[in-house]
Amino acid sequence: MKLLSIPLAALIALIALPLLGRWLAHLWLGLVGPPQDQTQLAAGVGLCALLVWWRRPNWLIHTTIHETCHALVCVLLLVPVRRFQVSDGQGGAVLHDQVDWLRTTLIAIAPYTVPLLLVPALIAQEFVPPEWRPAATFAVGLLTVHHLHGLWHNVRLNFLGKQSDLARIGRLLSLVLIACALLGLAGLLMRVLWG
Image 1 (cartoon, one colour):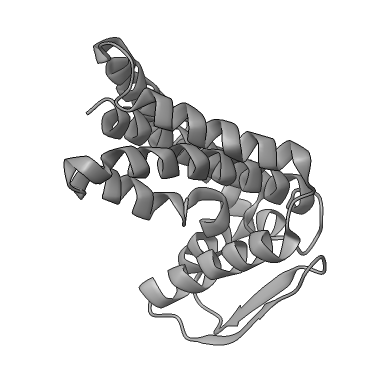
Image 2 (cartoon, rainbow, N blue to C red; image 1 turned 90 degrees about the vertical axis):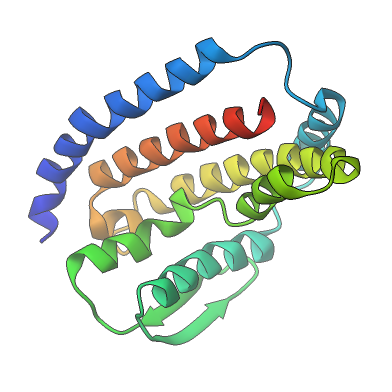
């Protein structure tokens, strides 16, 4: 089934990426003024950026989030998880039952496309009472940088390995799916922060 990953990547790139790009351009052109709570947003982005440059990444946190994404998608796709393992600096693993190629792909790509910690902050941004919105905006700023930093580390560490998530489903398909997820996330951030 890995042979299908190249034509599938091309198909997704030719259809989904232009559609997402047009949607993003439409959102961008419709933005008026600065985002809501811009001071808190800048503070969240700035604090996370300082933490990124001040200390090496906390591999235990990154690995736990990465493997939790795999496990969460397993649960959502009704795939039994047999073992969940994380370590500080030695990677981790989620062992699950063998499944079809589509579910294997969705499970493998999850940590690269699902902003696990950012999603609750985006939801909170939409539904919290007005007095809590600045705190939610701060969290969105901080967790956006955290997600992008974790994504950069994950791709950098897992792109070339023969047994890595990205190699198992096809590197080209992985990059196209990650690009789609990033465009979708950018659009979602614009809708929420300027909403």
